Image 1 (cartoon, rainbow, N blue to C red):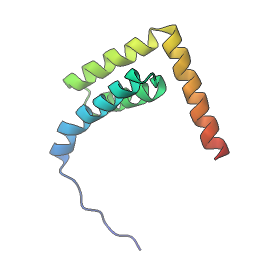
Image 2 (cartoon, rainbow, N blue to C red; image 1 turned 180 degrees about the vertical axis):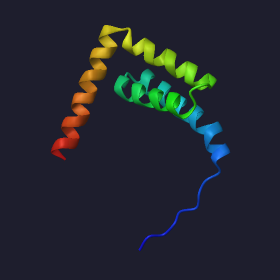
Image 3 (cartoon, rainbow, N blue to C red; image 1 turned 60 degrees about the horizontal axis):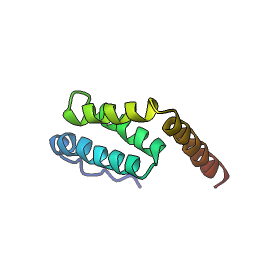
Length: 88
């Protein structure tokens, strides 16, 4: 049986979602979870490309992508994520 879901208030989502995603991206970065940080930062930019949160997310992505050690670690984390999902 298909049931329609109530639609959330789009204005509320557009204002809060990028901030929340950015906070999650920063937390992942601080926890050295660079792949997750990149994914979440990209989601911020996609959700609100002209926002201050997007500017911060872009800076966070640049700090991962410009550091060979962090970028390498992000690649390893993605490999682990895909391997885990493949064998699950």
